[in-house]
Image (cartoon, rainbow, N blue to C red; front, top):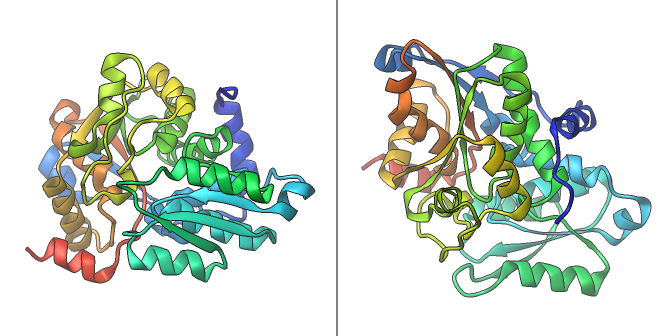
Length: 320
């Protein structure tokens, strides 16, 4: 396993991405404060480039390529947001990109990835091994494989979202972060431990795919079958070696949210805060909303991870 990133790596990542990634807004909700008795601070990565936090890690990782790596290009596999982030970053840095994506990827994410100039190779997420496909392509082409979460540069880059949040609002009582493979959660936990040591850090994943929760409870990585959930960005089978090693040391607990709770979150963001947030992006909020009673009178941070959802899909989920 590669060396684990530290908060110093998050700081270095922040310097690399400055001027390239957006410093996304932090929003509040008076409605939610009245409902829960707690003050919520939403770090809105749905307004990040490519519509998700993934651009942070992608730019941090690819900006460290040497000349040979840039010429050979990058390989990635992703359900959508990492794909777009790698594709855009590769375009900005002038290198070829090939992305392995599930055949059921939302059309908008697929079109955006191709629109940034990347070659897309489709696979069946329920039958095929995307890791194996990615490794084979990298070997055949001499390209560098950048996974969506289990990479030190990716983790460090994602942690810049929480770094910015703490710098803007100060210490928090709790921070809730969505969890797929754990890259965002691990990076944000590094920032939380450095900038707000008493802050409780929680990961939130789909109830149908609680590989992170099972792993944390067991003390070792637990692999599950690909979960069926509307949170397509969190349909992972297991946390990564790097991400889990950090999470085990820095995260207080991992919670779960049902698809119905994610839809309720999408409706809340759309009606009360005038934002479109994808299902995966509502995980942190769903966990925080259920836990708010424990933090009545306190300050709660939530990372909204992204807003990439097809409009027809958004309407179908939220209109019922």
